[in-house]
Length: 248
Image 1: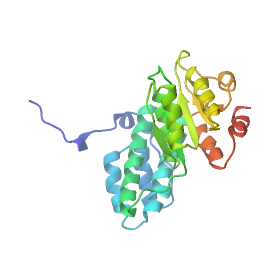
Image 2: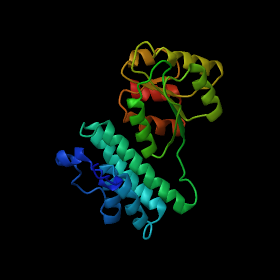
Image 3: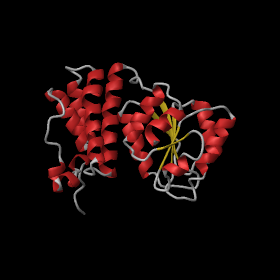
Image 4: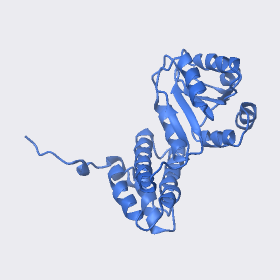
């Protein structure tokens, strides 16, 4: 029988083999925040706990979150946008950031204040959630609470969740043309209930012509647009205003 390795023995071979993609520039002038940010970029969920624990002895939890963890995830978003990072790295970094935030929240004795609540789901009949997971991670990194309803979510379940949670923004993802028809049905039901919730739609099957063909719909062409759209909803912009800004 071979020896059993501990979890600490796991290595990020993507970074070892492609070391040129590691972050070399300064993300923060403060060495404490720089180290935190780098661990997020490297997606080291085990090491981030030690780094954050040490940092909390000299920094406030709010500082660790805003000046270290979020800065690191912002860099991950940049690497994703330029094509240097892919889904596995984004997920690892997001999990690392969230582990650090959880530690800071325990130190504060309460959850960090979230900007607003967003509902996310994959269309009924569809189980492809890669794009959804990326957008969820980016929004969480930006300070939003994201409730993931899951994949293959029935239209009525999405509508009921909107009634229960009263989200700032609703997001839907569809990879197949046979499933994206769920989006206008959701929008129609919400409108019949006078719920004017901006409905951000994305995925491989979705395009601007389709999404702009029904009320509430806003096309999310680029995952990195999600934060800007959420910020606009937080400012009180209507779905019409957000659509005009981002889809014109």
